[in-house]
Amino acid sequence: YAARTNIVPFGLGWLLFPHNVNYHIEHHLYPSVPHYNLAACHQAFNEAGMLEGAEVVTVAEALRKIMADRLPQGVAAAG
Image (cartoon, rainbow, N blue to C red; front, side, top):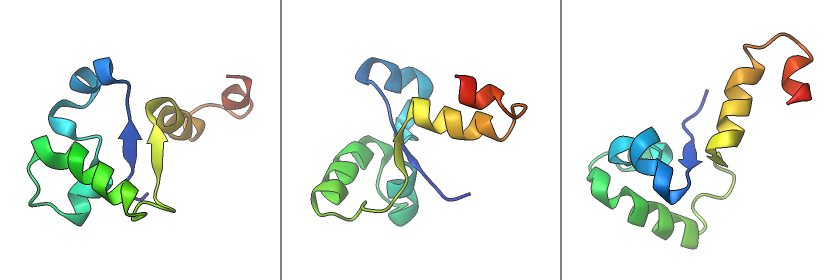
């Protein structure tokens, strides 16, 4: 599996991804960027087109991908 950036609703980011760990691609590209600057880094990468083709998905999309491998066949399609 490759690194992915998860887009989260503002109110849930602090709970689900403390220290902005949802910006995983950005962290791997520039590990020296402090966690509190990862959102700005993501925005700059996005504006420059550097994230085209990268896996930038919502939390719901990420969970569907993760659970599709673990649920019996047919269950993931029903959700």
